[in-house]
Each structure stands twice: as C-alpha cells, then as structure tokens.
Image 1 (cartoon, helix red, strand yellow):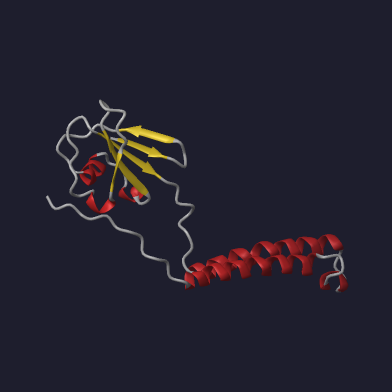
Image 2 (cartoon, rainbow, N blue to C red):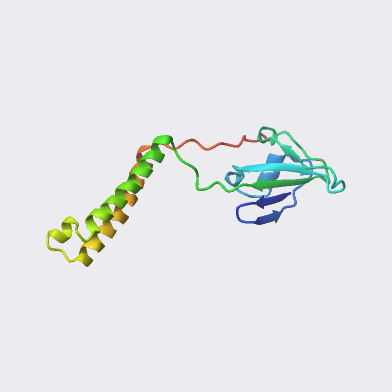
Length: 160
C-alpha cells in the first residue's frame, strides 16, 4: 500500500497482511482515518503497466479486497485549511477585513482624529496598526463562535 500526499510531495509505503479490505488496510497501517478525508484510492497491477490504474469509490472501501500482488495507492489532496463554514461566514470575513483596513487608515492616518486630539503622528500610526491587527483577530474569533461548522465526512466502521 502506498500513500501519496500531493500537497507535501509525501510518499509512504506500508506492508499490510493479505485478504484485507481497503479500509482495513488503512486501519492496519496505523494512520489516522482523518488524513484520508480527501483521498482517492487506486488499484493497479505492477506486472501489467500498460493497463491504467482503477479508481475505487469511497463507498466501496469497506468491501473491496485487492488480490495479492495488486498495488494499492492512496492520493491525498490538500484540503486548504478546512474550507468555508457558510456563505454568511465568507461575507462576514470580508466585512471584517474591510473594517480593519478602514480603522487602520482612519486612526493611523496623518490627519486622523488621534493626531487632531494632540497625539504625535508616530503614536497615532502605532494605535492605527494595533486597531488594524485587533479587529480581524476579534472578528474571526466571533465568527468562528457564532456560525456552526459543517459536519465532516465519517468513515464507515468495520465490524469484526
């Protein structure tokens, strides 16, 4: 069994006992099932390289038992950080970034209200930068707390 992580150019070969299903092979390799969330499984015969590898559907991983000598390859695609939680979450994130940019420019600008209140331009710039950094952090934390995340796909359990 080979595991290829396409995002990190990672490859690992594992020896597993014969007569296992694809899902049992993953469990026997002691790799986390969560790392196979975005994986595809391919079967090929190394003795016949002219025949293209066959893609095995995820729904069949608990049923398919490759014959002895068949090469099993998992290709793991990068996930990109988990994805967006919802369309509303994306809109709120964009609003948070725009608000942070506006706060930085307004508070830290040379003609901003802090300079008019008697602050030096340097102090106003530092305050504007601090506000520009604090708003996205607080905004993203608030968005993560209020918008529920989508459930992650689960693997079927094997009954022994």
